[in-house]
Image 1 (cartoon, each protein chain N blue to C red):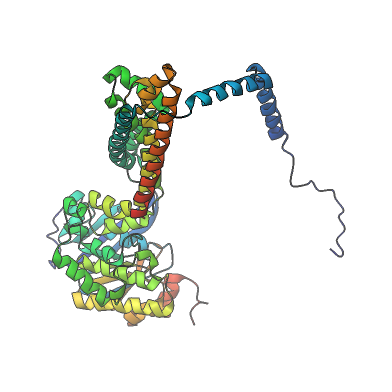
Image 2 (image 1 turned 90 degrees about the vertical axis):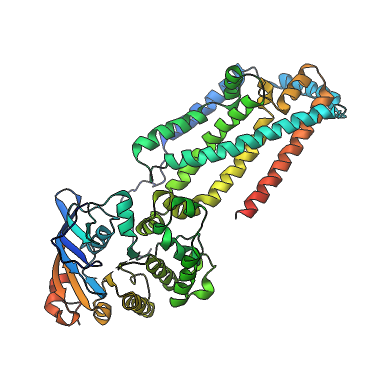
Length: 261
Length: 264
């Protein structure tokens, strides 16, 4: 693990430099990504399917191992972290998934509490010994996402929108310094999608943390993002304010123009 | 079908597969040959029925006079079954986990699968004989036999159950920074636990049955009593033992149902 003293020191900032990922050699999905994230708020990453948005997010919390490049977080290179160092960095990176990825057979409140597992010893986890502070926080978060009365239901009995709220509560439970959301609204109806984005925005503001959201819906992205990153074929083609994104940019990102109305 | 006149001959899509037909014919021929070779015929069968009739006459009424012997054998069988089941199930939990190919690297799963396959290879009677010869007569040999049998069954099914889980849930827990043990406890176990309980109760049932068998080769329990009663032609006592075994198995069934209901 390298210490990156050559970068400006902001403890919660994330610096991605020259990030590459090849699933099969010679066929890169990410072709050298450079992104700097050092201010809070929603950062929308837009781009067509298969362009590497999801791979990018998964490289940040190392659910996928990058091929080359570095990701500096908490002054450590995440790309090189291993074992307990990696787990300690991961617990400050909350992740929200497209298909919610809740543990179906656990109750809602239990799912929220799993967000604390990174802070617990295996022995405490075995005894289900969550601290009182954690339990109080879990109920408070469940209240904040509006699911208090569902606390003891099994996760698989909830609707899509409700599940995603639980997913968000679980991620926030980690006390994250950055949130990643991989297509959090793609499996939801438009109204619920907006509600989920509002919730992500609320937590980003409340916790004062950056939230990276992969999203294909450009209008939804424009509505909530403080910054937009456009990706196409494994490279960043736009990085700036949502107001600055033009139809030309969108054509470049998604290709074609018949879909633009 | 107006206007359509079939002009060319088309094959029936449901074709007869002559290879399969041939295999069926071969199987039936072999079956007839085997019956012939074994000397199975109606005279032999009716003779056998006569013997069975005599045996049943001597079995009734069942003789429970030596109930103390019966009870001590029963208690030993029950103990063998319970100890072997608990030990076997706990060992299987770990072996099954290490044999799951979606969680463990090949160098762990291959030897584990080999070990589990080895446990399944031999019938419990053969394993029981091996253990009686190696650790001596008595309950220990019976317990070891049933532990091996339990591993062969549960560890394999448990590994397969783990291989069918949704990795999305595992991924989510991994993303929270959870360590390996927490990962297993909170993302793998919830997905497989109810199936594991199902396998375990089934194995408890099977161990109860087998615990009355291992005694026949000297590995402790009611089977030993049964075997010596057979050898002394105490058929009324044999009947008493068989009735006791039926009661034991029904008790096991009852126990399994309760356990299953608790963990549903």
